[in-house]
Length: 225
Image 1 (cartoon, helix red, strand yellow):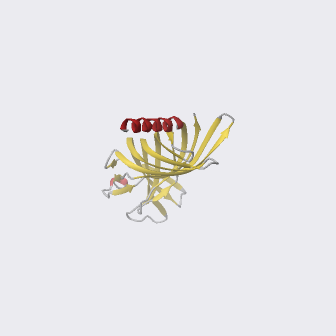
Image 2 (tube, helix red, strand yellow; image 1 turned 90 degrees about the horizontal axis):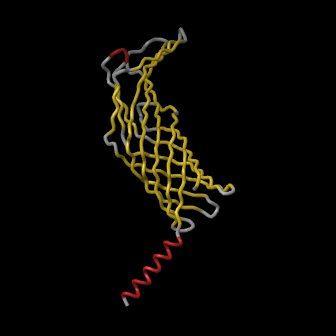
Image 3 (cartoon, rainbow, N blue to C red; image 1 turned 60 degrees about the vertical axis):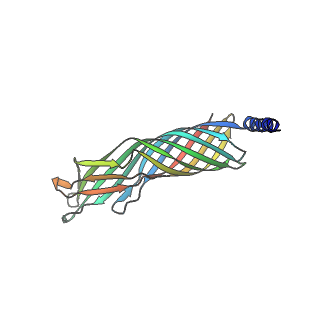
């Protein structure tokens, strides 16, 4: 009896696996970054990411998969000069954070018959490298002249090189002859914390710090193989 049941179970599993299929995609995504920090003002910054995806088709509507992606993210923001005031002039700090990383998530995708889809991904990010730069901007209204001075003593660090993230996307697939074109707009939220620190302008000892929690919106375009 047990042997018969085992044979039946193996047969069912084999038929299920045989009825399923795999899906491989190549994607490229321009992205716009932003972040949350009460002490600074964010400026639009652009980056890109690329990935190789592999999905296991569970049913006509559901698939589970993963991807290996590389991302290049730029974050730009400004902060007022917290020192003595200069008449008829504007001064502030302009900072930039660049992050290069690899990402591997677990993705759950839900798709309709008309090829609209919603995907939710939770994964890990490994920082390949990250760097920061800070400039002191001084604008003189009388001469209509702007000067930019790089702050040489700048440090940036993250608590961990391995962090988690969450991504939610909404997309549509199109069939063009034998090709399958993929499009998706998505939101990416990293659970990493970066801190930038630097001194004041003109060698002053005032210490400025920025705590950044990376996040961005991307538009993914890909081809199904």
